[in-house]
Image 1 (cartoon, chains in turn red, blue, yellow):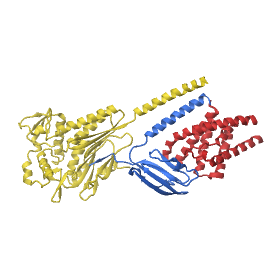
Image 2: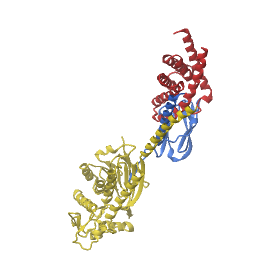
Image 3: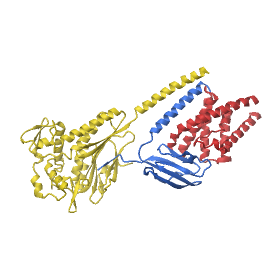
Image 4: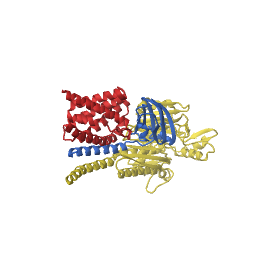
Amino acid sequence: MTYQKITRLSMLLTLSLLLSILESMIPIFNGMIPGIKIGLANIILVMVLYLYGAKETFAIALLRVLLMGILRTGLFNIHFFFSLAGTICSVGIMTFAKKTKLSMIGVSILGSIFHSIGQIIIAIYLLHLPNLIYYLPWMILGSMITGAIIGYFAKTVLKQFKNTL
Amino acid sequence: MNKNDGIMIGVILILCLLSILIFAKWDKKGDKIAIVYYQDEVILTIDLAKNEKKDYQVMGKNGTVIIEVNQDKIRVKQENSPLHICSKQGYISKNTESIVCLPNQIVIQIQTKNAIDTVVH
Amino acid sequence: MQEKINRWIWISLPILVIGLIILYWIEKNEVKEFTRNLFYMDTYIYVKIEAKDEKKATEALEQVEQIYDSYHKLADRYQAYDGIVNLYTIYHNTDPDATLTIDERLYDMIAYGKEWYEKSHGKLDISMGNIIDVWNHYRTMQTGIPSQEELMLHDTGSIQDIILLDHNQIQNNHVNIDLGAIAKGYATEMAGNYLESIGITSYLINAGGNVKVGKPSHKDTYSIGIEDPNSTVGDVFKIIYGKNISVVTSGGYERYYEYEGKKYHHIIDPDTNMPSSYMKSVTVITEDSRLGDVLSTVLFLLPIEEGKALVDTLPVEAIWYDNNDVIITSKGIANYEQK
């Protein structure tokens, strides 16, 4: 691993943290529709996946969850596990989807959808609320929109990124 | 965006719409009760068949949570949390719906009353 | 650009069509409830069936009504109907020696009554039409009770005088046959069997004190409440959970009148010609509504201990509500309680 790579990954990690915090501070991005967040930090995850690969993406994703926990929401509480489950599912499916013929936007949409699925599953388990499954289709619909937006951003930024690097 | 994305979006869209329609049919008819939980404990059971308009106050983790019953619907009217997700959610009335107030650790679920099918006399 | 639009149409159209087909299929296969209210045998009858096809359901309800209608007419002893030999025609037949050919269903009911006269040691007696009429008269007038002499005067004809011959023939020596404890259970059993025979297995029939259910489509069991005899507003004192069962109650709390502070109800003990008074109500759970109807009457006329002994010999369960408001149940009742 080169110094360059470490530096860039740290920078991307910082950016993803920044986006997460930014998102939680700007009301427009948050709680407009209950249960649906845009997830700006996922822009970075999609970029890392396409710039480097699965291993690096998992590392950034897990570190982001951990650091967000330490900085904002607290460790090992319900919010922490929500985000952990969502992130693992999301990065997992994106790693797989990247190998198919889907475009970056398609991959990002799948990532968003599985983020929701992961969260719902963990919520059903932790809150003992099997009824939450009824909200899953609505959340998936929302995720498709946010996923497409995230994917589009990631694609645009990545193009600029590659030109500058 | 390419053709494969389109197919994937289409398939997921239809699966979603279908499951929404199917779930809508799973709402059991009959008189409903709302059950309010605080950290997994039942703290309130409200009969939604009485068709009344009334506010209930329960204690959540961040303070008082005001729950409003309006006819056969129930909602969280006021609560203290950063995003106010559960008070923004509005009314629920089906047994497939629930309100989750994570910051206050309050959960509202709706169930169909176990009504008697018939009475022999 | 044109190509792109074409591509989108070709992708989305089949998906849309498939979606619509699936939706139509779901809608078509959805089980719906159909109900009907009937009034036969002096009782309001509620029928609920669950079926996919509305046409089939309507036809089925039509047939159920037909079944009740024909049993009602056959067991009617106050009125004659064109082309039907019923209890009225049998009783009012002027030639006491004549043999009449009767409908097979009526023949079966009378045979069942005779069979249960033996099994119940005379507690179920279908030859008591005249005594019942005397009590009905006093219940309508509400001005007194019949004297023993008056009752003896009307105690004409006995079960032995009802002679069943082969080929659905009856030789009735002027006995006023009353099938009040049999016809409703019979009709209900036949209605349930008919529904099952045409593939409607989810149904609920409530013919007053006589309930028969199939297997519900959306849950494990139907829940059947048993009315509290002391309640004036129809409160329930116990709920029975079951499928493919019949629940029948006999009680003295619905049809009765008061005279000089004492209640006189409609279930008459053949041994005393008086209303019995061992309990407030008794409920029988059986598979067969006919047996339930007959047995609930018999148990109502027996002291509770004797009734319990009888129930233990039969594949049935029973719940007694005694005069001190104590609830007594047979051994296997736990099978019908909620787990």
